[in-house]
Structures are given as C-alpha cells and as structure tokens.
Length: 158
Length: 93
Image (cartoon, rainbow over all chains, first blue to last red; front, side, top):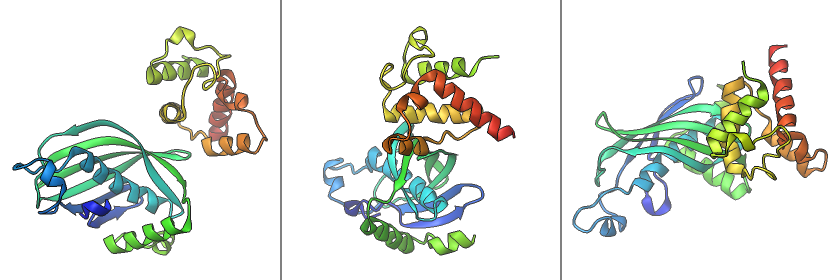
C-alpha cells in the first residue's frame, strides 16, 4: 500500500474473468502519518481505507471486464462490516465478486481477510463511465501493469 | 401474480422509502417521486434482478441528452413498465 498516493493494492493475485472474481494482496505499511492520528500509541488502519481497498479491488475487476475502456467510480457502500482491527504490517487478502453488470453501473461483493480470518466485507456499487481523459486512462494502465493485472490486449484475447 | 407496474412500485417503495400509495402509473420517477440518479441505480439493480434484464440506462440517457426522447418515455412509471415488458419479451424471443 502507498497510502499517500491512494494506491492500496500491491498486486493482483488472481483474475477469474469467466467467474467474474478477482483477488488481490495489500500490505499495510509499518509507518504512515495516518497512524500518528489514528491513533496515537495505538495505530489502526482506518475503516474508510479498508473500504477503499475493497473498492479498488472491485474496480480492477470492472476495468478488466471492460478491457480498460471504462472506468469505475465508487457510488455506494452498503452493509459494510468491520470485524477486527487491522494493524501496521499486516498482509491483507482482498477479494471481490461481480454480482451484476448493469448499464453504466456495477455491483460487487467484496471482503478482506487476514491469515484466513474475516476482517471486513461490504456490498459496493460503482458507476462505470468512459475515461474522462487520456491521462487518467494511461495512469490506470500504468498502475495495472505495476500490480500485475493483465494488459487489455491479453484480456481481449482471453 | 404482480403486474410489472406493481413490481416496480414495490421496488421503489422499498428502495427509496416512498409510501406505496403515492406511487402511481402516471408518476414520473424523477419529477414526481424525487428519485435521484444514485437511488435510481438501486432501483435499476432491483429491476434487472427481478425481471432478468438489463435496463439500457446509458442508451436512454443518451437519447434524452440528444433530444431524441423525453424523460417521460422512460421515467413515467407506466412507460417504464412498458419498456420493461418489451425487454422481457425480447429476451424470450
């Protein structure tokens, strides 16, 4: 995770396009200014960033399904549950499943586990729009390459 | 068995917390019931699931933006019901 750049996913572990599932890995940094305030003497990963971690994992699934032609934006978070505390240094396993591929939106169920135990889960709605500009599209392709999401050409072939 | 209108009226009532009795076939989802675009995503999701279809929201929005259609054609509930029936029929064809 690079919290200050909002890059919460370290790598894509598995992309299952026919099954409309994805899994990723995200390690909470040992040090971050966020932990200076949340909380002094008791650093905890904020729940909103865990939601963002699930949203980004869901988003990469939607990007892949749309072969990098469309960009998902978080629109709604439902039934979010935070079951355990997350501390610096923990390596989280994140997974997301596409429940519905609507017209201009997608609905996913996402969850995070740590060492096999549930950490949090939520149902997420994403608006799925055309990329607003080429800069953003290029940025997303660059991040995708860095975290190991197959390139759009590979997705088209698959 | 519920009619298409009854099904979507129930979905709207449940999703948006609008009294069922105030939802009429002549109601415009946006202008009369005050449903915003985010709530309409929830309604679309529920309709897609209930009828096994995919409401073409992007196409409808484009047609309205291009002046080729009015929002009444898609968002007055009796018209929305007719569009849903067409999509269900097309799926079965």
